[in-house]
Image 1 (tube, rainbow over the protein chains, first blue to last red):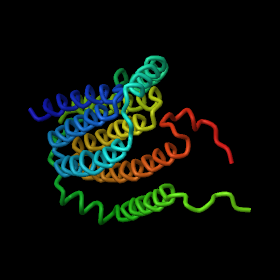
Image 2 (cartoon, helix red, strand yellow):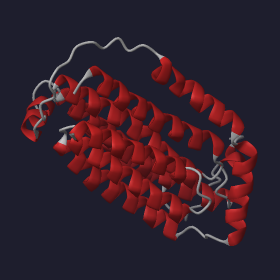
Image 3 (cartoon, rainbow over the protein chains, first blue to last red):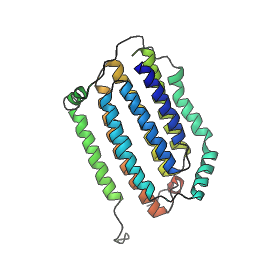
Image 4 (cartoon, helix red, strand yellow):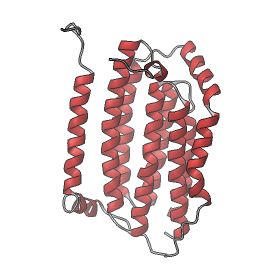
Length: 168
Length: 102
């Protein structure tokens, strides 16, 4: 039963993702992105990965989308920009579509060769924590280093240019 | 969860990645390309979680958390670059910065 739900919600995420990347209006694209992420969270729940689903809602659909919304608030959404987006998308879609179909084709038509039939047990948050802070502690440290590098990079990129840039 | 279920989830994950790739390639606005990049990153995340559920192994969700960290850092840097480019070039079209100088 739950696997049917997982496939249904995954197909829902696929459709709303296809809508999200083709909207000319940035706010509409963001709303469909949220729908995609929530449908993906339902898929994770159905797969027995409750911890990942909660993280997806909290961090992806919460923090990251709020970051997008803050930037969209500085964005002028005029009818001209929407017609420009629509026109540029109309001219540019065939080659990217071909490339995307080529990417997905091996997955659809290929032989996976999976014959084993194991029962999926839900993976608890405790097991994930044991993994992350045990054998994967180095990966967690690298992730924290990545976040620190991102923080410093954003601080450097986003600083205001009060001082004159041309120095001898 | 049978092997065919895993194949279905992998096809869905590849489809999400392909849609994100299509968005990155076909759109010109940097904002829309970042949204498409988020969609593209969620595809591998679904693949990791599905494989973890198939093998009843926590490593799938562990990789998902690392992908989440990557996505958060990428979005922060990408949006800061977007604001910076808009301030300098006065446009949100990624074609105007196709040539670098300096």
